[in-house]
Length: 489
Image (cartoon, rainbow, N blue to C red; front, side, top):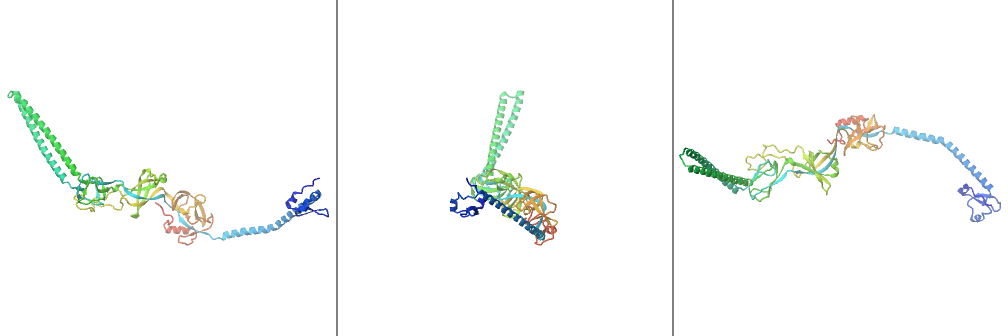
């Protein structure tokens, strides 16, 4: 008959039966030796001894559980007392902790702008180089660089002796042709009077019919001579006009109201056809051109405002307005050209002022110019992409975005977290909605801030105040504006 298997607790606990060689009783101990294992077949424990061992193990387990529960019951009062003492100690520590020192800045009502800054160049859209269409020598230069000229004003003249002589000859030819025309008209009138008298004589029978026909032929010849004289006068007039045009081509005149930018030649210089003598630009056509990345095109308003600071006068900002945008994107830089109109800089200087031009001016009145802005000037521009007016403005440092958007304030000497709606922000300020009038917000770090926690207001001078009143006093001294939150109006 096969022996029964050992119970599981015997296998788990590591106890193995060991057979006493002489007593024949089963005892329990460590794992049997190899010799005992080989003789296992006839010396296995009986079922009765196994059951006895099981009952002994159960009794030992129950005793251990009873002892453990008793120990817990004895230690529980001591543990409860320690826990209560720890909670009381923490509460006393919190009550005795000093208030947090915070710095407050008052909220103000104002504007916030979101801008893009880049650089650009001042260009003149109406800009020409004046050249002569004839060859010749410069005998008159009536303007200098920087002079203001009006449309049609004479700027320079080439030698025109030949053209003047031709014009005089053409004028004489016109006068001679006019004299011949007048003489032919007189001959026509005389021939017509003779024809009328001859007709009356022929009707009375005092003259032959042949005489009447001869007078009629004389009238026809006089009229033909008159027509020839008229044609000759027209030809002479055309020659005079051509001579006048040739003479005008020796003159250089301004095509529009402009400022003389360059005058590369001097008096007495020989010029050829299409050789530049002047470079002019219209001050009304000055535009500040910048290149904007195409990614900002969607954010750009149709009539964007801008502020330009030229390197020549960085302390004097110039207001500008977007006039137009380019039609194509530069494939190399992926940028779009923008043209801004300078506000208040498009007018020419007034007339009647002291001349700044050269001599030899005759009756032409010269005018001073504003030389502050010229083509080619470099500067930086701040382009307004978005703007919010009449908003509650707080420093950007005061926004707490760990859970939504909120700011911290001190009310009745305690910290309070206030939820706000963010309208617009830039690098220094934020426009929000949801604060009280005159609310002051915390601008120091938010670590350790909790609702209801006591706080002392730290004056900008570094002194501790007795509460929010101290921050209000400081705000009143600075006019409600600190260096942390200036408006970008």
